[in-house]
Image (tube, rainbow, N blue to C red; front, side):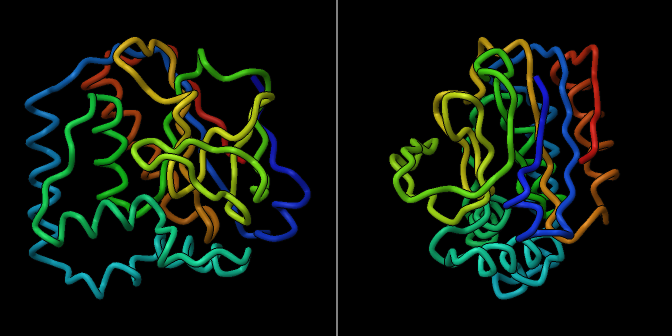
Length: 218
């Protein structure tokens, strides 16, 4: 599997950079220590931030600017990291999904990056980062059909697999996932990406028995 950035995308977002992490993993429903880390991160956010501050988190602010540039309303189609932090600041806990999903959510809470997590075994062919079209069908996890027109979009040979708002059901992480592809999206350049990648790899090793970890930067 190769990962490409289309000319269309690069011309629209010349400052964009990402880190892609691939690893062999073991998933399970829950890990109490991981959940404690999530609760600690949530408590720290509630203490340090108000809802009106979320848009000023650098990684979130940059993603929102990218949406506006491409013609998508970031208030209607919130980047996933923003949606997670809003939920926390409204006094709600995150849903417990699985260890792999939970650890990705933890990195988003700590960094503000919107992060795609995919079952590598369900991806068909190469992956290309481009722009969504209104006629493309995209079943977002937990949201149903999502209008991905003008959204930044990762596609494989069968269609869309992920946006900064939501990932697609077809390639979603499940308890049967043994190979993972994680894409950390930076719409303001390289700032913070290496720290987020290091944090992600540490959590994968600690909670998902990760092996054969490979990191690519684009």
